[in-house]
Each structure stands twice: as C-alpha cells, then as structure tokens.
Amino acid sequence: MTTTIVGVFDDFTAAVNATPDLVSAGFPKETISVVAQDHKGEYAKFLNTETSSDVGSNVTTGAVVGGLGGLLVGLAALAIPGLGPVIAAGPLATAFAGAALGAATGSFVGALNGLGVPEFEAKAYDQGVREGGTLVIVRAEENQVPQAVEILRQHRAIQVDQHRGQTVRSPEDRV
Image (tube, rainbow, N blue to C red; front, side):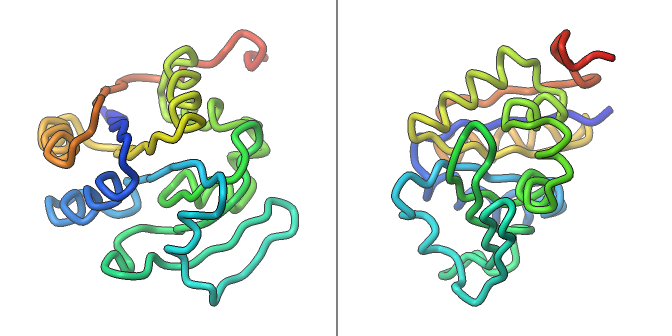
C-alpha cells in the first residue's frame, strides 16, 4: 500500500534541500512534490526564465537554479484555484499544469484529498501554505515510510504526517 507523507516546513530552503536527500535515498523524483505560496514572486526567481506559458493556468515551467537541477519534476510557478500563486514541483505541479487534476478537483485541498489526505487535514495544509509554509509531499511504499519521515525531520520539518489508504472525498464530491 502506498503512503502519502507530508512534511510541513516554515523554511522554503530547508524544504527544497530535503529533495536531493530523498532522491539519493531511492525515492523516485516523480513521487516527490514541493508546494509553497509565492506571494511576491520571491520563489519564482529560482525558476529558469527560458520557459513556456499556459494562458489558462498562468503556468511557467523551468528548473531550479543553483543546485537542484533536474531533481524535481515539473517545477513551476503557477496559480492554483483557491490558493493563488505558488511555486510547485512534482506530481501536483504536473497535474495542475496539465489542468487534469485542477479541473477534476478544483482546488489544492481537492488535489491533496486525491492523494489520500483527509479533507480536514488537507484544509489545514492549505492554510499552512497560505501562511507561508512549504509542503514536501512524498508517495512511498510502506517499507520506505520511516526513511522518508527521518529525512524530512533531518531537514527541520516542523510536522510530518502519514496518510494511508483510499482517497477520502467530501460528500459533495460523491456521485
């Protein structure tokens, strides 16, 4: 069974610095997402300006300058419905950039819910990002969970949670 591990950071740099260690430990980069709100375009400076733009979702993709290179998949500055401008990488960024997940769920809370995070906790993460926090989200097999948790804690995550099982949907999403 796959587990979604969410590390909450109050320091963007510490969060981003956790990703090379996760990749080195054997977590595929395609299973790691990073999300932080980008109020004033501060984090977008980490993006390569040689990018493409999607008019519908204000997406700009590129690579982190200064050390991360290709460690993260789909690093982007984009607007997530309900959350606003963010810097994001990994499956969540790719999904929102492609509008598939964004259209299906309509929000960051819905995207987290789709990864198996209960709605009440997804709302708390959403609020944490709105208040300046950064999330590192890792999808891991059961035997890899302790290692992912340890790496996130080594990089000063202020909270690390594990979410197992099926997607939890709100009543209005059920058909």
